[in-house]
Length: 168
Image (cartoon, rainbow, N blue to C red; front, top):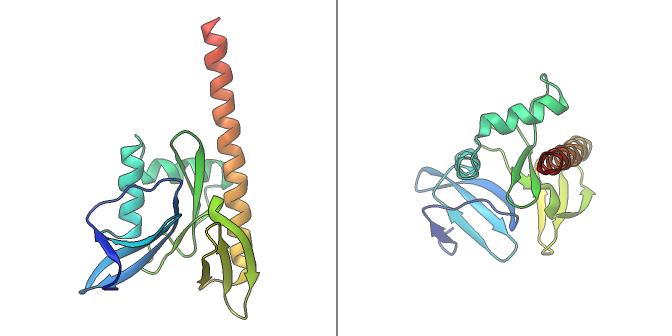
């Protein structure tokens, strides 16, 4: 942990691939794996997500409401959409409120492999990451995240069409 660079703040971007909870000096932090590096942020993963969503003019609650509108109100462990220029999706491995939950960027995964009682993912930057979730459960989460992304893109397209119509 000492070799990791530590930062007080961070905003999730499309370069963010994995957000993993870690403990350091008795405090809950996040280990962030991004396209270029791995570092420590002095925030819990869920706090990091909420702060980023607020920076984007939304909130974690609004993001989960949007997801449940598409996936169903009874769905737990819903993936969430973040959006700068293009929407992208993060999926939770466990309950988002769990202190052990890991958030994975759907767009960062290039391969998913079955292990005995876990799942190995390979990220775009060739980092291999073993997840404490069964392969079938992870694949279900991945499919939900992918479908949610398609839905978000269709919603964005519909808004753009309406805005184009209003201009005329």
